[in-house]
Image (tube, rainbow, N blue to C red; front, side, top):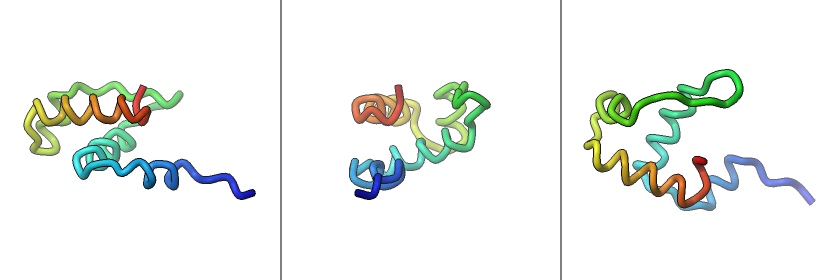
Length: 68
């Protein structure tokens, strides 16, 4: 049996557009050791998203176990 890739698993999670956008932004910020240190306010500013939308999107990504 072929093991499904992480991208294949993400595709099946039916992420919202906002979740994909923020996930992509975070992928670009990954540090050594798979650490991401970035304020939600920076994400909001750089992506032109409302701060409350960024917060809700983070909650969605945590609920789907995309972020821990």
